[in-house]
Length: 235
Length: 272
Image 1 (tube, rainbow over the protein chains, first blue to last red):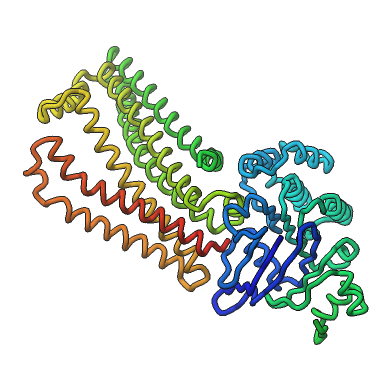
Image 2: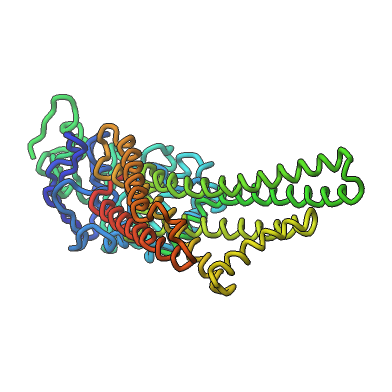
């Protein structure tokens, strides 16, 4: 489903992503793990076609990132990205106009479940409410590849639970999902794969169950080992 | 591309309605002033009310003239600043994550700027036409003299009304082509700054300088194409058309080249 080879993204002399090679199968739920500034967002933006790699290649379903892959890759950025004029309904109409895989009914139902008024302006919403709108928009698409960038950031515990539920409900059926987070414990029980990146480079990646067995520790503990001060973990 | 243009319109709706509101308010001011001027002229041309009405009329006409210039500037700035903002804010995700080609994205913004400019120009031209009629009928029949300009133009160039209108339409098109070519050069400079030069020191300044240098270069080329004694050698409308045509071709070339370059740069080095 997703094949990344020797991917590098440099900003001046600094490499945000450094020679990263990775592949993900269809229907997998992968956690993209790493602290702030480790290159998670840059990697997702390159897969979504919002940033061009300095070197290397990305293929989604065998196709290089471009117009055709954008039609079936859903990316939820961590920031708000809506125009000032937009209500939640306007955002839905925008998605409906540009993405064939967008289901307006499903989107409106999701807004209703979250007690959000479609006619409310997004810029007047709290960050938690905006996160719900973004999630509803993303999951209303029937995309083959879904990427959620820090979906658990800036939301309260209840919203966090509901977000995790939504991720669970929308996984599978051939849909590959990548969820980036530094809140590892929240994702531990639900993921199929774990991808650890540090300073833009891949440190460890594989099936979560196999990684746990191999290293004899939980994903959370691996995270602590990899990113903790002076700690190391053999790949 | 029509959908992209639709969203350009939606994004800029508030600004466009503000411009429209200002034009409508100034037109209303002019009509009221014209009405009062006519009323006091009939009753007493020496009264202070008549003088006030006349001053108001002159002020309202001046403001309408300024509004025309202001509208052109506002549309130009809206087109350029809107594109720059798009490449430098997170709202860019909304456009660039959709399955649209970079050519369609840049093209829609240029076309929207062009359509907006044409729509406002048409509105202002219609108002100018109506206002001259008002001035002619209300204040002084001498204003009808302006229509003689069209008569003179048609006679001098041996043109029918259709021919005159087509010639004027050609000139107006050339002016719009020139403006939109300038906007496209601004897009080129902004795109270069936001792609290949992103993160480099002074990229914004370089972008502005690049725009100024290219614009200056184009105007130099244009001035070389148009001979110094243009008014002496120009005998009629067809001469004028022949003289202007190379400039129009240059502008069309600049527009096409800028558009293709912007689309290529965004495809090869987008970085949002």
